Image 1: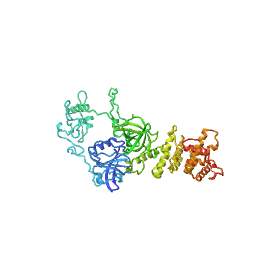
Image 2 (image 1 turned 60 degrees about the vertical axis):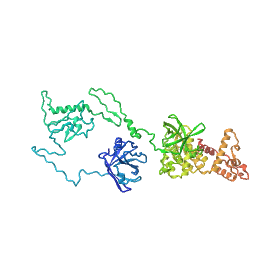
Image 3 (image 1 turned 30 degrees about the vertical axis):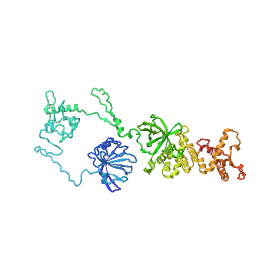
Image 4 (image 1 turned 90 degrees about the horizontal axis):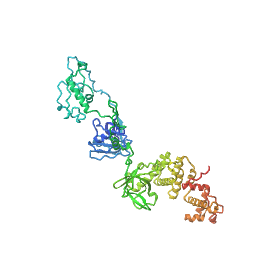
Length: 625
């Protein structure tokens, strides 16, 4: 336990919480945290304990009441509860980062409420002696004729020791620790007083068990020697040594344990032969139960939310089957279903609010999941995300907990978390900017548009080999997301998603898509629709015949009017002219006008064809600078 103590006060209520609170590093002293959770505050800890570096608090039975306060990193109260032995302990979840264990009733006396700001200051060190207390006078040496005085430093026992039945047993209630505990097979006599009047193994009136077991009694006078030259022993000393040897034999000290490596220290006999290895205790299982986050990733380590009304669909042939989602976290979900798959099976699930299968892509989200365990009423599944991708749910600041019960809000949260995970993977340097765009800068409509573009881009990129080894240029990604968030038409979102997917390369520094981003941001829906139709017809014609006439590769104004269902030829001529000014289609002759509709044609240029390919997720040749 750390030696520093702290004084804690409630700044919000201007009350004192406690002084002399001791710090305990839960990561370094897990057994201390466990002991406090079971026994409460012990001797010397009446002021309270501050548990730091906490990852999880064990849910264990308690025998003493105490107050428990969870604090975040800024020492603001996240949760507080008065814990009786029968009360349920609140779980330790983010944003909590430390916990205060206080005497029972402190929450009421200090008026601690959720949201209160606590001030934790290091307590001033106490002086060795108070100035108001007079120093003790020095004890003068007394003549030998004067009997020594009895004080707290030295206690002289002149009377004979009491019988063994009258020895106090409160300090040695275990026969393992009490060398005076008698057994029927081997009775042990109490130690006899030595020549100087003190009990053997007693120093200054205080009994020391270690000295009794390990040290020889000290004679007050030099012992005499026998015929063999060995010191003579009195009858009392011989009896005492017999008792000591018997105690050592029956109560040998256990082999010390190294808790860090969980290995017993080597113990060798006098002959030098190694002792056969003993079976190791299940220390690892105990610590994994006590602090699972320190040893392995707990399947329930992530924050889990009940997901009432959320459904998961898988396809059995051409028919979707609905399963109820019980809860969900960043790691996976639990399905309540009669269906059973073998553990390890990979399943594609579509998550959406319960009801008929949604055709609209913005109302659902797809995940590949792997079966982790089989339960009594369903199955636990983990998200099978691409390598390096991490799903982080409920990280948006200021989120409303009431909205989390709405299944549609849960779908939006899942979609945003999936989009953020994809963007962070392809461009880690833009993590902070992308997170800020989705959580703070953009409106809800633009954020939803950006999420849809990112999810479409992920599906396009997944079709390429080694897709998740690619990366994108930071400035280019931010430009695509900024411009693409304004688009709410699905077919236009597909074009922005294609630019986002083709911006990913193995080097991660390609900026060739920047010219197409600038062109696409300048085009309204009608010119872009005309360019798309013209490029599709031209590519189809070039595929069918390498010597096709240019007239067959171009779209006439009449064809464009029929395909766009627009009879406004003036807008069509204006849109074709806009595309020609940008170099995306060939320029029309001067005779092109509403009076001469046959002269107005949309023939894509090489730049237009390359832009069309990139916007559809195809990596074509790069335009020369």
